Image 1 (cartoon, one colour):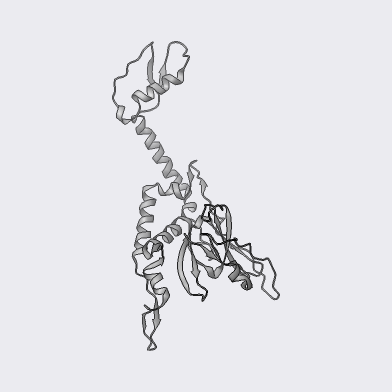
Image 2: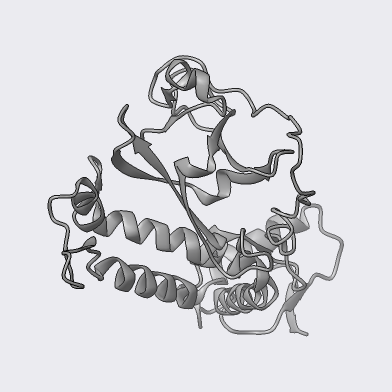
Length: 288
């Protein structure tokens, strides 16, 4: 995945334009400066994003986007919505001067939006990935890559879990992308800063209109209950669908754990159901 970016200082844009694929020097954080006669803007950008968190649910199960996608219903819903939206044709239109809109096929953006978002991704795969990010994390991000003439060359999706939004003291928003992988050879755990006009951001449902909250994090308690029920059912059938039992021995055992593991290995699991148990040394099973 190619990432291109520029600094917040317009005078050094050409010098600091770089890519995660190998151009030198990551950009530094935007300058914290206060401009005169600007309204007092509160930094509430992340209020929505910090309302709901991934993590342990009330059932005790840990819920995040990966564990949620292992639930059949969540996977089916995400795939259905993502594929359905990705199939919708996306056209660019213009006015023809007679109060009619026609497809702007000659515009450079037409091919990007309608056919191929970037050299590595078709429009379908690009839109599908954005929808998956939106449904799981509540936000979808893509970097807008431009040439020296400010023409758009492509759109590259960013992982929503690695993106943070903040605000300068002047009130302008900026985006921070944390590249924790080796997107740059030999470099990991680097923060890349983008200006607002360099990012296509599609927020989901949220409280401030700037950042959406994750549907998975918001619904982690019912999802955690679903995971608990599935684990309980798996454990129930793994033990032949029978209550927990007790093995009694007339004397003390030197290695009770070995007896437990042998019993589980020979008689545990659905494939060993209804096997005939052979007991020695006065061992007697009891159900609880």
